[in-house]
Length: 103
Image 1 (tube, rainbow, N blue to C red):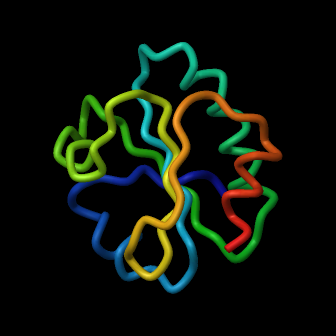
Image 2: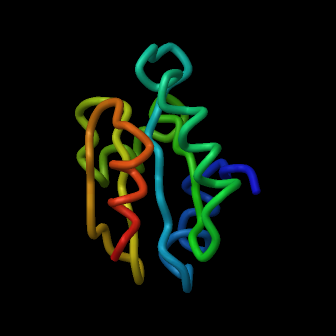
């Protein structure tokens, strides 16, 4: 399953009301490190069951980036029961991202 495009409009339903944990990738199209981590995020979306994976373009959704105090990208946030439980910033190996998901 591909990563969902998260927006202000669908954030409540897709993330805050989600019954399963959600991995959010905050990124921008111009960000080289974001492009490096994007294939890893997509692999996780395809391979890991029981979670949702979403992407938020910080240029298109500055309000959501602000709510999460995103200062650097890429920033990955794991949400569970509508609350952020883990955050990492910067390019990470797939193993580190998978470790974030072990809640």
